Image (tube, rainbow, N blue to C red; front, side, top):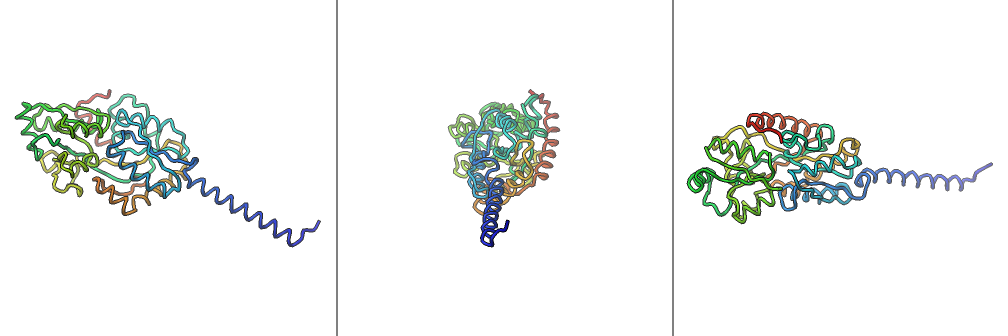
Length: 332
């Protein structure tokens, strides 16, 4: 049976349209949020804190890079433990990610007997995007203008006793408070909160005289003069607050290793999906407006590949495992 020239052209045209449509569908399937119409970016702390603000800056740009809605989902509680458990239970299809700093991923497994997740087997690193440092701040109601002023004030007003707010129990801020107390012969007690936002509310209300948290948690109120950051960790002063000395300058060394921010996915998420999200994140933090906003919050912005993030997490965990063990802390 013969086929006319017009019939052949018609069939070829239909085949071409089908091929193009299939290619577009496959491309959109990867770039469009990877199995769904929305990507969830979970945060383990309540709205209003530094980590939440960082997630919203990134989500706003990632939606453009991925071509789909990216929503921040807050799952506060237990220092990010609830969010981490939710990530473990999430489908490994690229629809759910977890933006976290070192505490949940690295510290919690060291200080908790049964955190309900094992980062090495339940999660996979996607990419890192910044490092930061923790800081010691005093509330506006204290007369202290420097860290040494604070030490003298506690000895004078509190007879050496004082409470210091921390965003989560058994966190690096808690161990820092312990070390500070021993170094300066103060009886300091850590007061744990469910994230930095409620801690900051109490500091602004002069309900607690001091707190330890990340620079991003303090930066806005420090610049407004509502709280005063008097010392930072890390190996150098921070560009966002160059007037504030490091603890090493004050004679308290050993806290130079900087914590990190990274994004994690459920184990088993396809590599192509992870690679696409990683590439989108790299593009997002390269946008001047995004980089400037994150830098202004006290972050040192820099892309870390999946392998680099995994290596940094491992090295940071080894450092803090030694510090926690030497402190005598027993996992709870």
